[in-house]
Image (cartoon, rainbow, N blue to C red; front, side):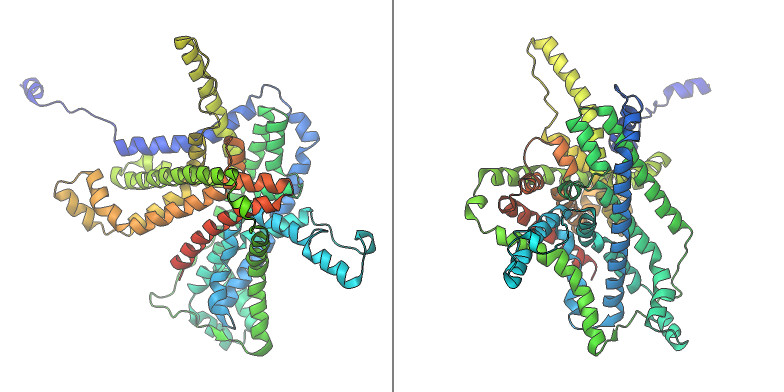
Length: 547
């Protein structure tokens, strides 16, 4: 009897959850380039690791380590001090300086490097003015510091990257209770003691997170160190792969760079795990800025204005001074670069944000353990240097391209060559993997603000999971999705290492690099100015979100 009843009941077909499958697919796409780099590093055709270890690798590691140390310390000091001043005190220009301190993010570090050299070189305005003022005939009549040095590279990167620390430190100081500082003042603590003993310890996790991002960007940088002739791990990947033609050696150097990032991320997470900070009350009193008077007020203004002048105003002025050549604005090369930049970076922004929304919504809908475990992994791409990611994308692609060409040759008898390598689609994939963490984090925060009762009501009315996403969630998170699209687009526009390695057409970033590398800043200026304007849009968005 039970067997007969079982035969009459409809059989249920167990199908895999599409949300779980989508999460697994996205995680696979993110991890595949990294796995490919590790595989080729472990199985090189020609093993040059002993040669690298005894010759160039120590120099790459030393220069990278020195740059990380210098840039990390400089950005921590600049970002923390300026954030403390704009939150805790009132002084002339504070209202606009607290937003102007974000503007150096609009200037890629390699653009700042070109501007600094043009401003300080022998034929630049500074040395020209010195020669005219003192009557010097040539460089042998006076001493001027060398410009293209490792220290100059660290200086430029510090000015371009300190806003990452500033924005997080400012938020941490603003969230602290004003009562704690008043108690410290009542106990006799002076301004420095209140900063060192009260404000800084509470803001340390945020500052550490900002410095970690800065150090990742320092390892990823190629344009600045290449222009200043500083040999780092990233330039080593380029030289071994593109000049030496050794895939295994480039992958081995890439693994060293990846190891540095993994160690850095691990240390940052450990440092935050050991710290526990909580607000004492829900309605805590915010910090009230104290007015500064006289010389102290103007010193605070100068301290906050200098990073803005050096990191944004000076590069923009140098670029503008070269950007008035109307012929260059109409050059076919610039127009093509704008076209490819809009196409590739726009497509990457759409793909990345759609994937991020799908991933976050899928984890919430499936409630399975696998998607929840995979979602943090998908943010790993942001920590991977662009050169490493490009190498990991390029290697599997070449293999697929060769198999595809062989298949077409076998079927048609014609050799089509490599169809995918160097295409725009490959760069879109690389950008999507690199900046997926931005889209995922924004989507997670936005969907988390949607009241659970709204999608539950839609599901009770017969809406499917996809229908609920379209009808309920997307209208409510439209602003956040638009912000994520803009941020991914801007970061993709500024990305240089992956673009140089994967794409054979000019984008704005590669055009600026190519022209400036030939000491032709006049032709590089229009593209650099367009990049800076696009970056300012992201800065305006950040300023609006952090009011």
